[in-house]
Amino acid sequence: MHTKSLKVGVIGLNVDGAGWAAEGHAPAIRATEGLDLAGVATRSIDSARRAAEYFDIPRAYENPGELIADPAIDIVAVISPVPTHREYILAASRAHKHVITEWPVAAGAEQMREIADEAEDARVHHAVNLQARRSPALVRAGGFLAEGHIGRVLSVNVVSTTAGFGPRVPAAYLPLESPEAWTSLGTIQTAHTLDAVTSLVGPLDDLTAILDVQYPEVVVDGERTVARTLTDHVVAHGRAASGATVSIEVIGGRPESDTPFRLEIYGDHGVLTVEGGGPRGFQAGPLALRRDGRQVDLGEHAAGDLAPSALNVAHTYRALRDDIRGGGSTVPTLREAADLAGWIERIGASRPLERTTGKEDA
Image (cartoon, rainbow, N blue to C red; front, side, top):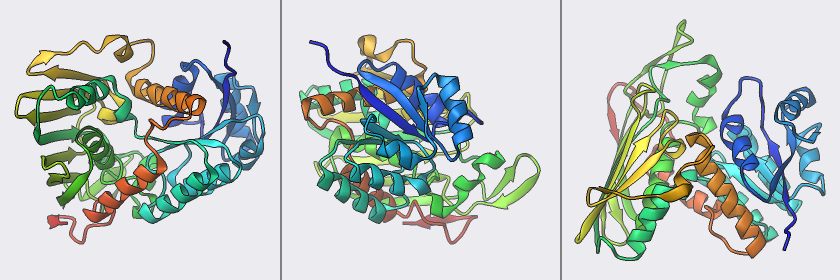
C-alpha cells in the first residue's frame, strides 16, 4: 500500500555560509523515504531562493509565516537561530502543523514549557533534535539495558568533548557567547550529554556541577579579544532515580582531530562502553558500542551514504515520520526538552559565571 509522502518545510536552511541546517537537516530529509523537502524560508526571499535552487526545493517562501500557513506543508522544521524558535514553533502549533526543532528549543526552561503546553494542546506531533538518542550505538545500548544484559546499573561515567567553545572564535559564531542566546557549551554540549545519559539510565534524582572558564579571553578572527563569561568546562556528578551514580565531564576547545567521547555504564553483571566523537560533539559523530570489551555489530543502521553529522538526524526524522503515520511517540518531545533545560538551569550552566579565572560551584 502506497503511503503519501509528508511535505517538510524548513525554516533556516541557508546556503550563505552553510550551517547546521545545510549540513545535518537537508541531507537527512532527502535520505528519509516518505518525506519530501518541499519548501524553505529564511530571513529574506533572496536567500530562500538561493537555498531552493541549491537544494532543488520546489518553493521558496517570502517569510517563515508564509511557509507555516501553506496547507501543503505537513511538517515545519525550525532550524533558525534560537531566539526565533519560540515564535515559529508556536505559530506552527497554532496552525496544527507537526514540528521538529533544533536544540536548544528556546532560551530557557520557562519558554520551553510554554511551547510544550501549546504543542500538546494542539495535539500535533513534535520532535526535538536531541539526535544522539537515535544513534545506533545508544539505541542498541538501551536495548541491552532494558533486557538486563549487564544487570543492575551501578554507575555511569562520561567524558564528552567538542571543538567548539575554545580560545578562538570566528566572528560569525561570536553571538553564541551571549547568555541570552542559550547557545554555549553549558546549554548545548552539556545538554546533549545529559540527555544521552538519561535516555539510557532514566531520569536524574540529583545533580551538581563545578563550572569553569578555561579560556577567559577569546580571540575573534585572530584580531580582537573579547571576554568569555559562560562556562566552557563542566564537571557534573549526581545520582539517577534508579540509584546509579552519574559522573560527567564536558570539555570545549579541543582540536578538531581530537574530540573524543566515552560513556561507560557499569552494571553488577557487565559493562557497556560507547566511544566515538566528532568536532561538533558526539551527537554529530560516529559512535561504536562495546559490551564487556567486545565490539557490538550495529548493522546497516550505523552506516550508509550519509555523513556522520547527518546520520542521527535522519534517524530522528524517520522516527517522527513513523510517529505521525502510526500515532506513536518515540522521539524526544518538547516536554522532555523543557525538563532537560530545567536541569541545565539547576546546575547553573546557562548563566554567566561571576568569576572567569576560577571555579564556581553550582
